[in-house]
Image (cartoon, rainbow, N blue to C red):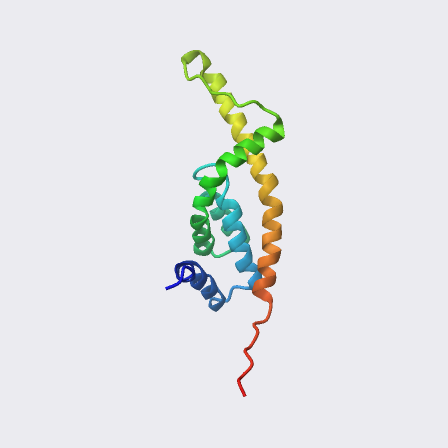
Length: 153
């Protein structure tokens, strides 16, 4: 059993079975790309809601986009700190440790909200172009005709 087998069984087969359900290559590519791009949204719980809204408004396959979203969850955890640092760099803000006493509660809440907003802007700056490129690549790969093997003589 190769290292590729679990990915083939858990991700590739269900994805390719969407073709049998009548989904176009563009719709499958959009499900995968939105599942990944929205799946790394740097707010816990946000990707599930965003993917559900995207599936509803764009009339995409809800289970397919949520499956990709859940597969992207480890990537979300791995990218939260880089997005925070990129947001700080973009807005040239200093890292502050919020002091959680009664006198500084509003300051801590403001600092947390500001860091969250900077992180979301950083996510958008990275994921919007990356998602567009990934969509174009995936749509091309899914649309291209399959190469038939040459029979042996």
